[in-house]
Image (cartoon, rainbow, N blue to C red):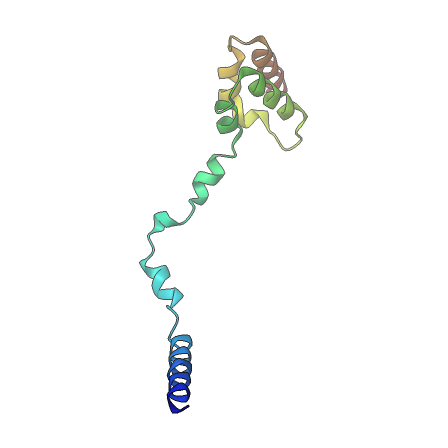
Length: 108
């Protein structure tokens, strides 16, 4: 009986000591963290530009559909993306070039 009581006491004390140990301070961890560990906001913004999206379309059909969607987008300002539109104006795919020409006409 005395052994089991002593054993329970030891287990309880060990449990209390384990639970009460200090948790790592997050500010210390944040200071040690590299800047590259955090998402680069500029990189995220760059990936949402029309140039990036059009350039990374997998097929010419997707690129043409994206450019057609831009013609309907009220927030898209073709005057700011003339270089991209001129690039796609001479695209071998007729759908891509037609959509780019339509956007260029809006920019004029």
